Length: 416
Image 1 (cartoon, rainbow, N blue to C red):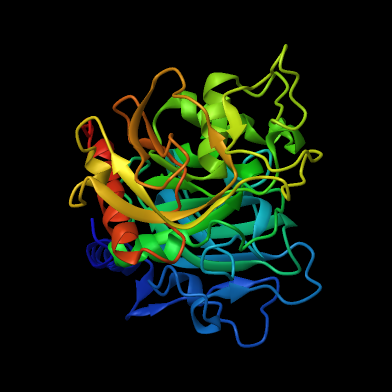
Image 2: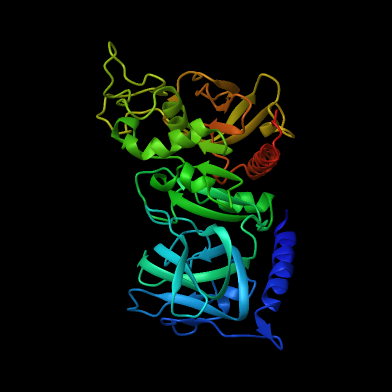
């Protein structure tokens, strides 16, 4: 479903639903614990889901530690499902609610909990709540118990009468920053404009590695695909526990993945070794008892301690890639030999169990394992960077192909 189709469907349904809560075309204005200057109480019900402009969102005022926003219906409404869009950044969760509860009431005095945030706190920009059973309500309230910033921004609320109603939503992708720096926006955000260039109307969110797990990706609305960034630390320096969510998503097998450079190496490591045994690097590796020999370096010009790359051989800039084994659909429309951007000294030394080598080194390129695919699933580990500026036509072609494969997978067909 395109963004335009989704918005039209949602708007048409919402207009029908809101008709029962209006009188002479007038909706009872929402209320709140506070409202920041310039923001709108009615913004969350204006059918503009994704705008972060003050006129289209409600924001709590500074100093409001337990903010709430509520709407009163002129006649009782049947509520079975809720869509919420939060935060004041287009693709990073910021100034939203970590812990909250949706409550309903028939009289404005006695409140019933309808849906709550996940126990660990909500990290989603977009979430659909489905009630155990539909209820007739006169009031609906969003009550925040723990903000994740100095304010709470509610961009949109949509109300559906059935607990299993279809909630139209545009495709969206997840960019995962797998570096040691949790700051967002961060490394890997470059995937987002590339994906949008190939699929106009696509929405997106970026998270750090620690929030990427099955609980995140399985919540509605589910992302079309996830992208893993490159990284900067050698693997002996990495906190393996942060990769446990990636390991679980990979094993679950329901989310299309594209990983670049360090992200690709991370996928290979968790696939081959998991996160419960130590990882090493070529600098600290005991050749008699290697821990993770799947990961290596291109070469060395000098001996250095872990994390010091001054003695490492790098591949940087444009390099030739050779697709092999029959052109994978990720490379459809490209010649067998194409050029892509590289920036690495580490590499995957062999093909892990369950994976297939679909691209290798072309003329003048040193790293042999250039792209892996996990069986026939749309899960790719690429040493090269489609998200890096330098080979735009190739990047667009591969991204467009991958998004098509992800949609095919979502429809229940195996992309070959």
